Length: 157
Image (cartoon, rainbow, N blue to C red; front, side, top):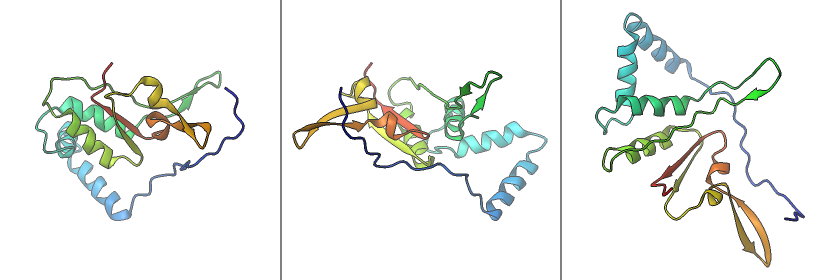
């Protein structure tokens, strides 16, 4: 593959999340009220995550952890360890998997939703297209969702 030109179309920098003082006060008040029973507070938060799907607390907890993300760190040798959280959600049809993922996509700061039907693993990373007589590479869903959430629904493995 010979490349003659590379152009970055969009690269949003992730900044710090700005929390307004009234929201921060509500957060502190909520967790102060649940200081003695933090799991009850956690369950209230999880019940508010995709409220149209009843139950599924472990799935909602895993989804919440994916939205929050992990902590990037480096070990003693200086190797960078990514803090990305990955989740594979498998279950019977009609159990609310797609609803939970669509709800999470609305909460995420950066999200790409792709249909897994008919898409290959290579197509999720990049796609070669002919444009004006020349071949160009277009970023796939996984590349576009860098630092955010990539949802692949109905993936045919």
